[in-house]
Image 1 (tube, rainbow, N blue to C red):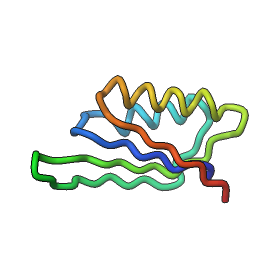
Image 2 (image 1 turned 60 degrees about the horizontal axis):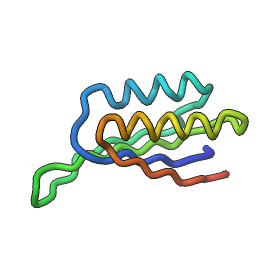
Image 3 (image 1 turned 120 degrees about the vertical axis):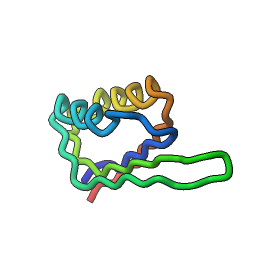
Image 4 (image 1 turned 60 degrees about the vertical axis):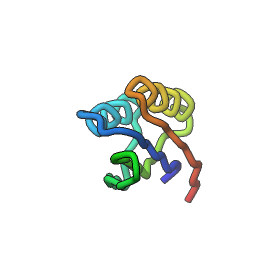
Length: 84
């Protein structure tokens, strides 16, 4: 696993499918996936966490595309490097 990626915001139909396609495009591998609905005072917050392996030579483009995809859906994206 090279990165932990957290996508959060409102519910978005097809989010996991879109991001799986991005990872496939950059030869990345989803090692672990967790999706949760968290309740808050204003409504609901959805959080999807991916643990992924991204080949070093494709890392920058892959992460930029993931961030852009989340942003286009009105979601926030946090990336944490995790070299294990």
